[in-house]
Image (cartoon, rainbow, N blue to C red; front, side):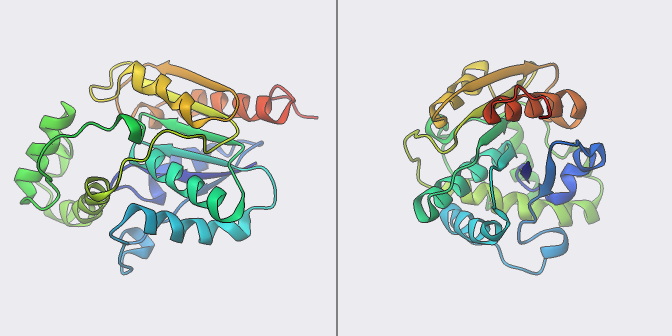
Length: 241
């Protein structure tokens, strides 16, 4: 089943290389390339989440000839939800399965106060660390070339969230699988469970060992959960016909 992968804030298609290397037989993995990074680094990214979702939705549309999956991590889950909402509203299409990993749905978004996306590099990283309880990009602080590549898209993605509206929870997919990390300091089990509001049908939720990026350390178990959920949606319990 075509499975479109949406990366975390600041991330790109290459973030999913471990998943692509796993090459699951029942999932055709398609990492989504966002503007402003990697091979699309020269392209400006829209300043509104809805505009980015509309652009990505129209790009993906010709690839949709049957059931499909949207799989997003953190910010990517929010973006995948927005793209799904656009496709349903404009074209009457919905993912058979939405996979939301280590993400808080927008209707539970916490208001942190003043925007931070315009702060200096050090202030931005410190403020992000205070929000999440982790030290983001600690390994990049002494690597200017890495900081210059990763920080701009991270700022842009965060600015999209800061400027976006908070729509009420409403179904965007036929089924939802939500996954959280047991040691994630920012995303609670209740956040993980609350993704059920975005499903028209079944919702399965799982907590796996690890922190906010645990799904990239546990590729095979997470792909197993996705494959099982796809099989249930298609009515074959994950078994090949």
